[in-house]
Image (cartoon, rainbow, N blue to C red; front, side, top):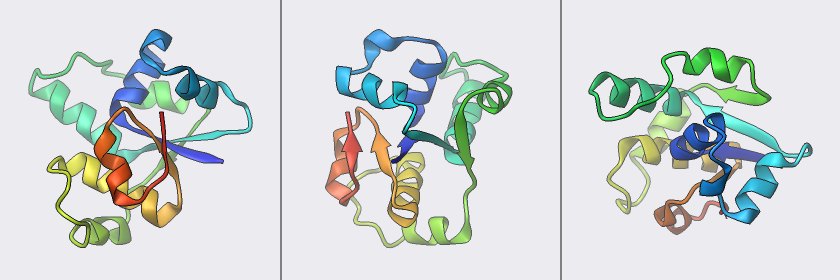
Length: 125
């Protein structure tokens, strides 16, 4: 199973804030048969929000991800194009791109955001 991690999940996981995960969420992330996937969208969102002073996040996020057992997922033209075809249920552009990636790549999503499930993607939480 491949699971796309939402931005807040990545930050909690890297900070080892396991108490913020549901029991099911932590079991999934701790399962060696599960391939965790982190999107370039997440790195972009963290960089923007950190730059605006809205997020206290590590400056070496890419290095941390490179040294972790996650797969880094690039953004493709197909991902970007699907965003315009999604129903307008979520206003966050980062989340909309994550949803598009989950749909195209057939990934489940680890997130606490209830709106993701309204897009017919598998949500693990």
